[in-house]
Length: 250
Ligand SMILES: [Zn+2]
Image (cartoon, protein in one colour):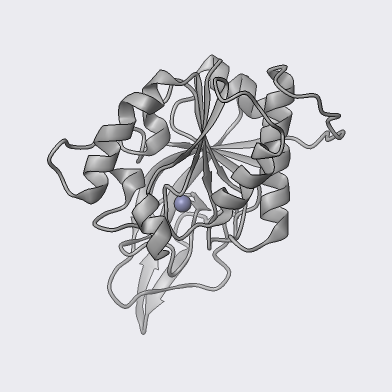
């Protein structure tokens, strides 16, 4: 079993470093679990990225820009691992969410052990996100970067998985909560000058014909029912976030 604990895919998300510190206290054999700092330069400069979002740069280019070159270099390393855990934080109001790009049998098995509140199956990034390169790739987006609960719950989720894989001893607290799965199908473009309507919230259904953003008298109206995912005015430069469809797994 080889696990990569990947941190700083986004250099301004410091949570990964704190998570790695907690996991290193467990003294797991380095042949089993290694910590990888994906974008060291962006991390040192406290920037999300240098040239472009690393988490949209895979599989990368040998002679590309800074992030494309990193992606090209680490893609084979990611492919070689049995499990890749990628740690993020978010400014979007999004609690205890796991992101995956490929719902295969093993990924689902591990996700259910970690027991997040939400699982997002990301179609728009299924070929270019870091985890898209992994046999089993699981990204944690458990909350805001500085919130202690983000750190605590992320570490707890990883420990549950390590216990399940018989790598550590750990008494798992009882949790009977159910997991909600969303298929994330497309992006919602952020048009110049438009502001999101206040009551647009992650995981809260936006019905067809509902107004979700406006610019003075100009309105953006939903053309279908969708669940806002990773939504926010400032989360991304060019999109408000993503459209999700709730799914029930058998
Ligand atoms: Zn991130």
